[in-house]
Picture 1 (tube, rainbow over the protein chains, first blue to last red):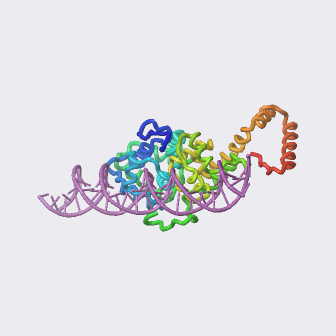
Picture 2 (cartoon, chains in turn blue, red, purple, yellow; picture 1 turned 90 degrees about the horizontal axis):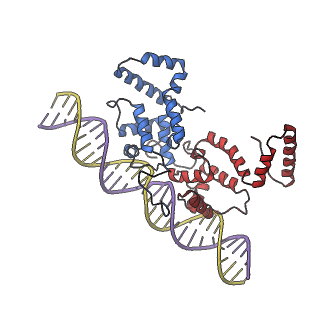
Picture 3 (tube, chains in turn yellow, brown, orange, purple; picture 1 turned 180 degrees about the vertical axis):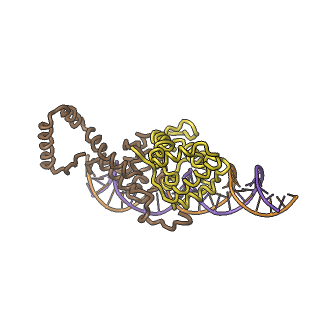
Length: 151
Length: 151
DNA sequence: TACGCCCATCCGTCACAGTTGACAAGATCG
DNA sequence: CGATCTTGTCAACTGTGACGGATGGGCGTA
């Protein structure tokens, strides 16, 4: 951003992607219930414990709200690891779209047991579903599951 | 690198990839002749003019020699754009390997005669192609060029 | 009412990503 | 030989990525 490019606003940037949207999407996807959702401080703490890396609650908030966007590889790795997505998720629209679809369907429905779980989960009360979701999320973190990737 | 991770040395970190190797690989792939190859300052200037982004010669050298490695997305984008590879090239070993093959091809095709050779080779019978390949390999040996592995 | 907890948001600070400018060592040319 | 250019390398500087620590507000419990 020195000589030939006087651009710095949130619009007109062909280089950097919508980091904030991606982040918020992942967060609200992981914690669908607004009441249960932890704040950025707690979230950051979880990330630190789960990934072993470092990220602060304040900075996480700044990223999610779009105040900062030019992340370094270190923090990018923490986020990608915690959410179980490849780092490219934050870079490429193409990859992001592909992952998003997978995130909802392909991953879960691949395993028969998962499919059955989904079938039987349908109709349960929101509270019970939230509890189940939390348990699954914890299990994933505990097992350090690798990113869900496909061709 | 604050609380749970007292590590900061250049070795033993499973988080960041070998940025320097990737960079040097790309550079020497793009400029195979040592004598003709421009210095980091010239290279950086080319990058700036080609991509419209910003990167300094010194910093490019620091990255290539491994003195700095925790790049931000902005510079990562400049490098990826200039070399014509997706940014994931610097992050994922898997992607890097896949790209490397294509890269060699792309570099070769910059030479008009090579491109024409490829064009006219298309459609030839396997026997003829094998013969041509053997001839090319012999020529390489004769000119003391390094052998090429096939895809 | 008051106390306690967590929240989002802000602010001051520090480390370091990234730059500028200089240097000596080698080419290349007259 | 010296003049000029480019190379790799370094130190000093600047901007900002990333952080810790306040602030005040919302909500629950007593």
